[in-house]
Length: 102
Image (cartoon, rainbow, N blue to C red; front, side, top):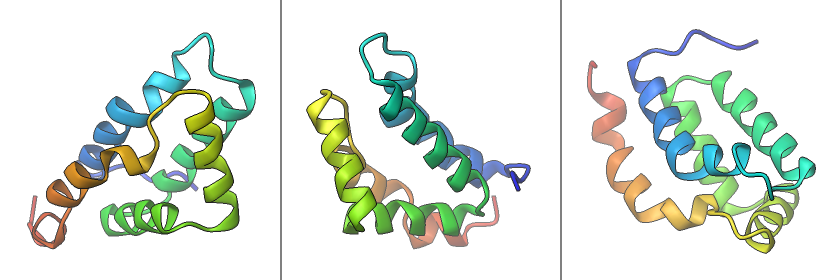
């Protein structure tokens, strides 16, 4: 179930849309498989609150078999992966961000 995004959730999603998701979704050269995977990732992230989104991000970076294979596909097609925005993501979406009221 897709939840209504609050301000923190929107901030996380806006960040990832700008740096990872939208360049793939708007690319004429991105494969259908890659675009489908990105849409699935967006759907899964939108099911979560901000803390869950951050956890999902770190789980993808840590790597499960599907996320490792998907990251390899992203790289082979020449797009940013979660790993490419890791440093900035870690600084922006830290515990202070998650604990703030708004």
